[in-house]
Image (cartoon, rainbow over all chains, first blue to last red):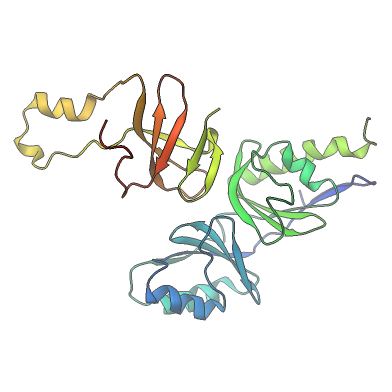
Length: 183
Length: 93
């Protein structure tokens, strides 16, 4: 699958955005090491579930109280090397996990409704919006779900071996939006 | 469906979690000195109260952290959840 689209007023498109750089960072947020990593990144590591911070090509996503995922458009080897240098020999880890997940972009007026068929979280704008990212499930698949903009557009990051199933699940969920809403 | 509040991620559906059995079961200080019977009691024997029960849960789909939940086994009401480094609210049973 490269892309799938449902057109019309209730349109929604699904596109794969493969090969983004992803680096898993684990460090004590209260340590000096965290400060050095934040300086290298150019952004503060978010301290709360659902929050992200961005700087240039990098976005830091909260995964746990001492764990983050840095998603980047920059070269994976270079980003990992820089962050590993900032970590030094202190307790923590910096691991290139770019091959762990792929990225599916769901975009269009019906994108939220498609996700709401299989995601237990509240995705309404009062609770979720651009710049937010959480680990959750969509259908039966665990994903990192990130809202990109108000279109609305979402990035879903499933583990690579589940991506095919999630893609098919989403295409099936999208198909009903081809026709007008039944009132 | 239980609605369990993760100390880090907030309220999420039960399907995001894994169950980890009874909480506050201390590992014996000198396992080598235990009799087989005492070791079996540590490994296999757990409380089965009707009412509030402290148990471990792991937020496997979210932040992947272990924490404790106080749940009423008769009503399935989740009374509270707390971090592993916090004592059981209201003391030990």
